[in-house]
Length: 127
Ligand SMILES: [Mn+2]
Image (tube, rainbow, N blue to C red; front, side):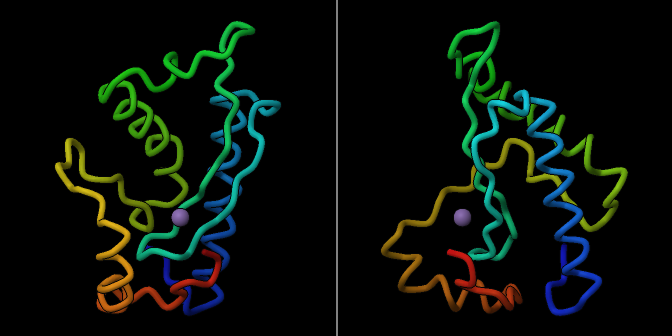
């Protein structure tokens, strides 16, 4: 995990952002990567990216996201690309996880306490 409490951690996050955007540019073609923003509003730093799902000159989101296997394969591909540079700083999500999203109501009721227990120091910095 990245530690945002020190300069080394901040630099690792910067490199992770750069490498993640490189991945997006290669995977989806740079002209189709509209926007990518680092979010530090959850326990795990993450990037929201807006992608035009273009394949063979046509809009075709299904080409990239067709079913659970395609999504899981894309996560493997992403992790495989970034793992060499980040080692233990980066961990692939649990494959086949049955985790459910927390409802907005529960997040606002319990989220800050849950995130605090996980040690995220930057809660709600970049919403
Ligand atoms: Mn977010």
